[in-house]
Every structure is written in C-alpha cells, then in structure tokens.
Image (tube, rainbow, N blue to C red; front, side):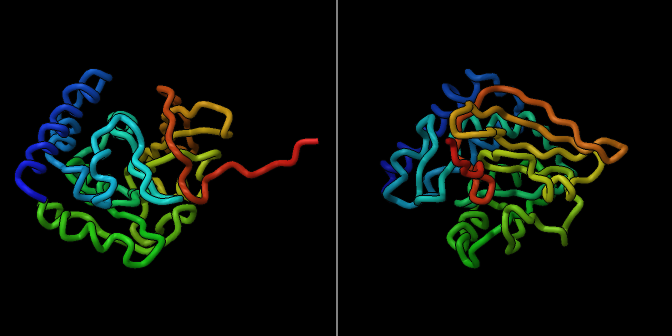
Length: 225
C-alpha cells in the first residue's frame, strides 16, 4: 500500500469518527480514541478495503463480516467497558473488534472457531501494541469456560434468542452485549444482558440496529401451513 493510500485511509478514519460516531451519540472519549487509532482496512482482505469506512457492514465471505462502525460503537458504549475488566469477544471474524476492545479492557479473549483463521491479525495486533489479546479455539454458542467468569462478553452480530451458555459465563455484575433480533422480519435492537447479584439475568433493549446473525445464533426455520 503506497503513502497516498495510507493518507486516504487515515482521512477516511477521521471522517468515520467525526461524521458517523460523534454525530450518532457516541460520547465516550476512550471509545472514540480507540476507533480513531485502530485502522479498519488492515484487518480485512485487500479487495474489501475500499469499503472499510462506509457506514454499513462489510461482507468478507458467506459467513464473515465486519460490523458497521456506528452499531459497533453503540454496542461498546452500552457495554461500558472498564480498564480492569476481562472480556470475551464472540463473532470477531477479522481481529479488528478485539483490537478496538483491547484498548478499553485489561484482557480480551477472542474465540476462534477455525484454527488459524486469525493468524493474519496477530501481526497487526503486535504493530498496534495490542499485547492483551488471547486467542482460544471454541464455538461461539459454547463460549469459553476456562477463562470465565467474564466481566464483559462482546458479541459482534445478531442473535435470535438468549445466548444461554454464554450468559452462564458472566461474572456477577457482568454484561453481555449483542444485537437481539428474534426473526429475519424484525428489526434488531442493541441489547445488554446483565447478571444480577442473585444470579438472575436482566435484559435492556436500546436503539434499533441491523446487522447479520452470528453463526449458530440464527433463527430456526419453521414451516408455515
């Protein structure tokens, strides 16, 4: 990538922060700063990089995507991450989400379903100084018990039902954030699940959000007579 291209991406990233995030209610300075300093384009294939800063999801393959900036930032703002917390990242197909979150928490554990699928992201994390990211192999639906309980579980996509096994891995006071969309005909909403002191789970819905379903969390097909 030549210097002109790098300059173009830098300008596009600033425009994303100024015109997409800050005009849509993103007020956390820490979140804004992380988005401003983590390049989106380096985490996706070259043929997709021209769409890196558009206000829409970037399709990478049939079941992989980069979530759009505003939805991503709103999820983070409602998650309210803290610098001393440990977080589980679910559905990050590129390593970008883990890089952004790593600036906001103590440790980011990222689930990788296909061994080696995130090898390309490691060098970018190193270059950005993201030394608090750990990759573990596992399926999104099952989560990752070894490092549980988590203060935060950050799901980068939509779910059609409560992710029960993931909620079990929350610490008391922990939050799970996702886009909750019961069926394909409904509009999704940003959702925060929280584990209460008695172990029960509360649920709060926020802004509308349209984003693809995460693999394993799609609605079940039903026959209609």
